[in-house]
Image (cartoon, rainbow, N blue to C red):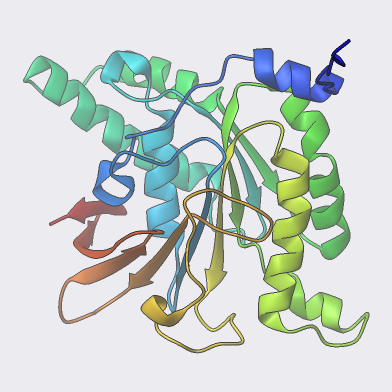
Length: 268
């Protein structure tokens, strides 16, 4: 008699499988084209601040369905203190005004309409302000509980993932920067793997044992395994010329140009 094999799954895996989650594919095609997929890991780095791109990504991800946005839910680990609620609210209002103008072919000056849409966006945004190493690791360990409670979360952002590196070096022997990032990725990937959410993290450009250019760094992968990432995005600021974003995936590399106007990215 042939043996019968039964696939077992935990309660968390069952909940994650049955939960309805908003996909964020094609929500930012200028960079991700047809992606990113749920489960992808994305790295953003640069010599200057990554706030402008992160803020733009967050607000675009929150845009309501009625304005052709994903209306996705996001959790932000705010360790640098730059992704403030005031900053994101102001940027969201700018984007909502533009979307409303495009949909009606005339400017929208109705603050009630904008505030109603803004409140809808903010209901899907969770920001954790983190000030020290203990809070950081405690928040990461509680992420599983959070994702179980809020199963509609599609995007998890760490700005920045490496904020407490130097604090930890005072408590133990020095760890290589690359090894430190991989250790944190292992921890996060282990927690979120059953929830199929997209994870995006930032780091300073100097935070790498290797000082190679983006095309010579460790390759990206089509599917995420332990410590692996799917997108690597470098921001290059130029005071005298246009700013650049260098994007690398598992099978291609390309460059996009942009300006910053009123805190908003304007792609060229």
